[in-house]
Amino acid sequence: MSDLEQDIPLKARDWKYSGEGNMKIVFTYTGHEPSLQNWLLQLNKGETSSTLAVQLQQRRDACAFSTLVGSLIGQQYILEQRLVRVPREFLTALSQRTTERPLYRTHAAIDVDQGVGVLVPNMIATCTHSVTVELKPKWGFLPQSAEIDPANSVKHRVCRYCMHQHLKHKSPSQLCPLDLYSTTPERVERALDALAESPQNNMRVFVDGVLTDTVDVQWSELKRVLTQILLKELILVRLQRLQRELDPRDIEGVFPVYERAIECGELSANEPSVDDWVEAVRLFETQAERSDKQVVLEYLLSTVLKDVSVMVMIKQWPVDGEMPEYKIAVVDTEPKKLAKMARYRDLSQDIVDNYLKLHPHPSSQKQCYE
Image (cartoon, rainbow, N blue to C red; front, side):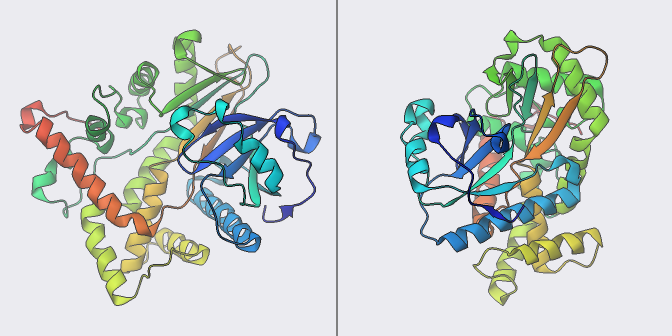
């Protein structure tokens, strides 16, 4: 996983744009090189000023962090990662293919000086009669921290996602993620229906490798099968439990701890190292007494788990029998940055303030249930 593959032939024409987020862009291999069949290439966006050696170490650290997340949620859900040398001319050719990208994404170009890319197995099956569903389950619990300001007590009743929808969208989704995290089939199906009606960036469905609207698939059957898989695997139950256990105090309780840790030097302006994360997971699992540093790192780990994606690949569709052959993986497991703690505090308060402005009276507020 940590060795850099130097001699893999990379030709821009063999790679098809697949998608992107704020920080990364992904391409699917379409050529004939056996070692690249069914692999995706993840590249960074923006600019870098670091050397190849530094970039390689950063990539290795990211791989190590994914493995660490796997130790919490189950290594079977973490995809293999291969580090590959990416020549500048190859990256330049890819960066010039802007017509394949959504217009609102093109302001951030591919980093043509990054030097190292990451290959991961392609969970979007391109074979005939296959379906892949990508879910972003989001925040899975109602915080009960006694450190939440009484003025913000709505947090105890309305989940983060449902409140945030009113800040982000004029027409909020009907999804409550707590339904998706439920072990009751009817609630899981209700959540999937809400995602199908308004997927936003929280659900994508691929049929034979092509992004497809849910109206173009046998949605009632796909919903039934997805529910069966999610309840069998219980990965969402595990994510929910870890989110809650790693964040028992809410950002309102954690942020003063963060400030104190910075002031006394227990934390610095530098981002945590891999060793810091390894020790944080070890202390969490042994239920050791939490230092200020430990409280903050556990909060950041919870934030990672609140932002992962779950990929479900069904290899034969429509299904022949009750339970099809499938593969499930958790992706987007990059560490969250210590430097964003103030942003997390401010966003949390903005979400609550906006929701209370729109729904000042408890009688008009939604009630979410775990």
